[in-house]
Image (tube, rainbow, N blue to C red; front, top):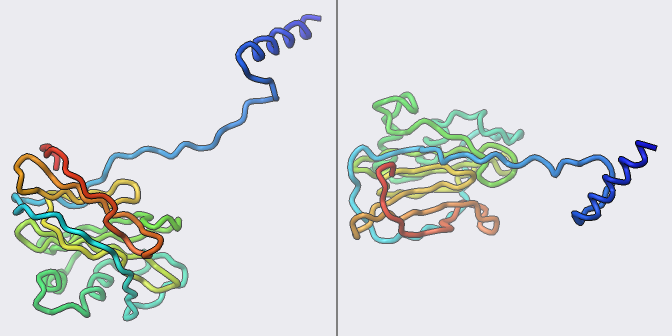
Length: 211
């Protein structure tokens, strides 16, 4: 009798609250963990302000590198990938010179910063992001994925940036602008149609000490 009365009270409470009793509670699934932006690179001196740029990505297969059938880009050293990407470029290009001079990635005096791995295109596998410091607060941002077993460059931009961040699957460059006190926030994201990273957002925000 007591058990029946308790069940009746529970059902009455559920009806009053607009819910139906359908059994044990069920999980709605795992909530994605929020994470703060990770800084990839920061200028050691004030960069010169630039006008608004516009960059559209273009996938470039690096066929001089060994194939990676597993799709695991960790199997190829980041500096090896950088040198392959620099191969077709003009040898007088400052980025090319910096890569050729590098002996130990992420260690001074090498201008190639420590590599960052992140799933940028949403395929569930790590991609590679490299920042190459080219002097005078300029940085080249290169990103690579593995497509059909071939390491492919999906981002290649040069920027006069104050800092560069990774946030989720976005690469964010903070550029100073001619109007003092403001930065231009450029967000590069995966573009399914282009099969490369594309500049999705360009906006002006007030500068802050952290950028």
